[in-house]
Image (cartoon, rainbow, N blue to C red; front, side, top):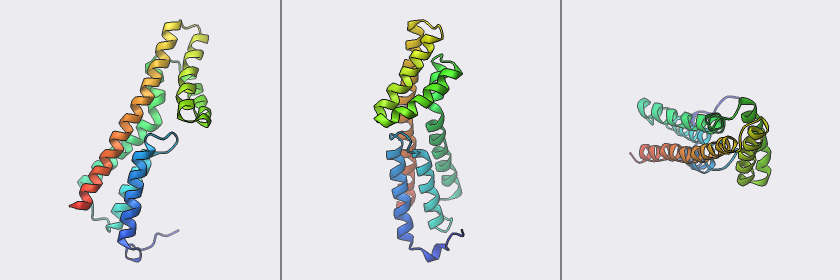
Length: 168
């Protein structure tokens, strides 16, 4: 499928789509399974395409793309990294990730409780002491919550930068 020429689409429509994606990126950064960073990145690229690849300039474009990619990586890796940092085994981390995804059927709380609870129970079952297992689960939970805060800051930063590009 070939993209239509930029002149064939109303620029205002592309700006609206770009900012809708950027706002969805911020909202998605706190919503499980919604790729906030990827939506922000898409918003930047739609805006850039709509401007005929002239706005934002290469330096600003590189910066906002980098920030959006950091948000994507934070979304993908934060839970696993925090579980590992808390002392959980690789096996526990992988199983907890799967249980967390199933827990999403009960909403964000199911995701958080499912993941942290699985880390605790599996670490305990693998012979860990109560305190060590609780620490691993706590660090996992803290990492997941911190990840959400970091994603909000990153995607909001991309949005603010793009508002600046639009207004200038």
